[in-house]
Length: 395
Image 1 (cartoon, rainbow, N blue to C red):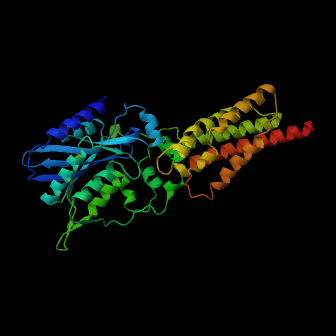
Image 2 (cartoon, rainbow, N blue to C red; image 1 turned 90 degrees about the vertical axis):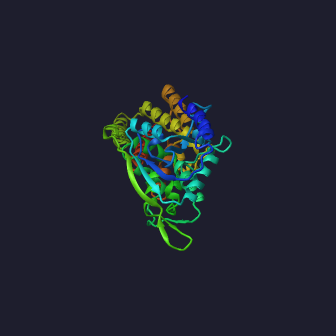
Image 3 (cartoon, rainbow, N blue to C red; image 1 turned 30 degrees about the vertical axis):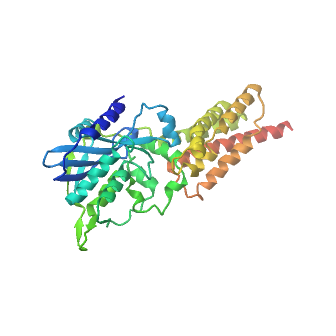
């Protein structure tokens, strides 16, 4: 509801803000917000601020607005069909909101001619119209940061040159930089985003999808003027709001690495126990298969149906897919009827193939995922050996 009201406010603001005012003395700046604690705010935020120095009208244009309460938002987000909008609000309101959340806001005032400043203002006002304000969001290639960058580049009549050396990071490594204190979110992202996220040819321009990286590029960027001289794109920068350390995200004690390490030890102990009694404790295998199947619903849906980039190159779909729900049902049948598990060898082969692929594929598999895969393989091998031995005795 709150976002919906902002949507209505944006429409009104587009009609009222700067209406009929000739932009004689505009100042344009880029605002970069540090990461927050909400899932969608972990990577920071970018906005454009335009201040009329004569009238002191001060407006922030924000390409990161969305309506969480809209029809089927979660489904559309998972499918990659989320539409964001350009919003506008008084700068005081924008800063108040980020002060409440304890987030740092840095301002880079751009070194622009009045003509270029007016061009940016007109472009943003045009995009703010109801028929233009909506766009299809893409977290890698079309987000609040890339939209702000493109608006600035389109409005400036001279060429912009980014001088910083290329950042030797893949898209996944860039995401990890912003998730140091959010290991569970990082683990979830790593499970659903595939090999294309680890492209070594991810160039400088593509790397600007992270707000902090784009802000760093602006620091050394310059404009090539008509006479061939160079002028820095940023006149000066300042911290408008300091981060509140008390509200910063704290890393959890239980991390994916710790949890899967404990599970590996637990499965190892259970497997030793099963070898001793020469019988499979099916309850553990049913629970494991349910985890693989339920997680596989998300992984497989993204792999086959989502429009999100990189999800269709995800090798985790081998061991995380809905077929494991059928396997869990089958294991339940074996347990209740005291039947032999005839698919133990198949499960072992699937887990083994994935584990071997870890060392061949280009997808960056993190330590916690390797431990998870090791746990699945260990249990699959144990169950197969026990079932194989028991079957030989019967024959």
